[in-house]
Image (cartoon, rainbow, N blue to C red; front, side):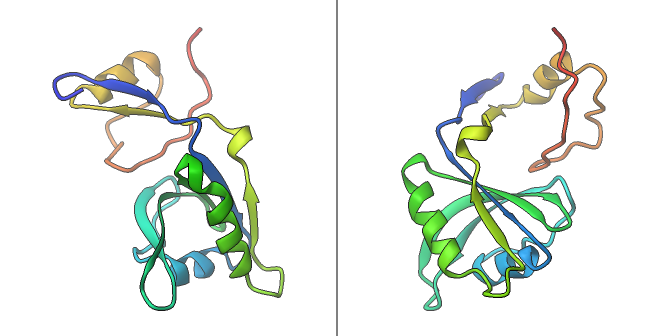
Length: 142
């Protein structure tokens, strides 16, 4: 992986979707990093309690203006889901949902990762793909 590329199956990791008109404000209040980034971006962050202590260590992907996917450790999804649910606004403006069983999670890392990805997705332009981008691509070659 340090010289070429490595492919890792992270499917067992927990996946939580947060959506709704106040989803961004909700995550901005809980995360220690700025979640307000462009659609398709991914950020590594922690969720903090009111005292500033770390409650969760995860990544957040912005899928739409008001749609996010959180990826957390396999053993932490139930706790993170409960912690988020307890902090949701009472007005119903945020929905939190466990989608772990609906999505696979594959990570491609290493200095040649871009080359490997290009070989698999020849029609996808990788020139604008930057670190922590999460493009949508559905036309995998058979």
